[in-house]
Image 1 (cartoon, helix red, strand yellow):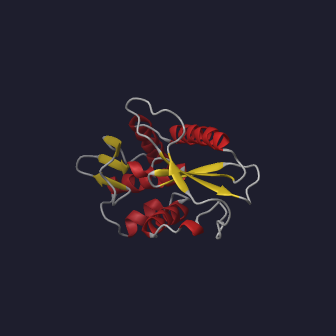
Image 2: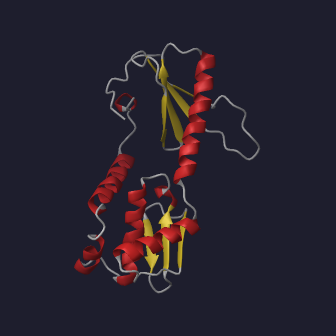
Image 3: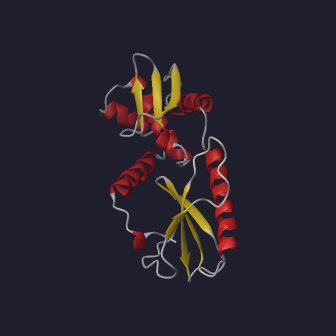
Length: 200
């Protein structure tokens, strides 16, 4: 999103429920609505940590705001559902990548998502033939997930990060782009939240 360094107009930012009933077993989402006089008709939304930011025109009524918050939460959820792939699909994708870039030589016994890896994007145990990807990758671009999968597949063939390992990864044309994306994510996570620097 283009940056709006001033984030100038509108009343103070506020955090409120999504404007719809919370179903049994459903976690209430934290939603922050930001109004802007510069925004005329468009409404947009994005995730930021554990909350959703919804950007709306300053002139909207409270009823319109509630309706648009609900619409944008549903839209984001639908987009995320389309992006998240299960363990079976992940294993299938690993097989495709191995075939395409590693002559099918990397054959893991298991490939799955895990929620206990917050310091690494993926891990591999060559002796067990197991590959685990951090759930934090879910929702990231496909080429980034492919890069991390291929990285771990390459470890089934070359354990360390020596020249032979990087030669294998150089076969993937988006290696540098994917690494840059992940480095950007890590850098952004370390930055303090500054409201007036947020994009609109």
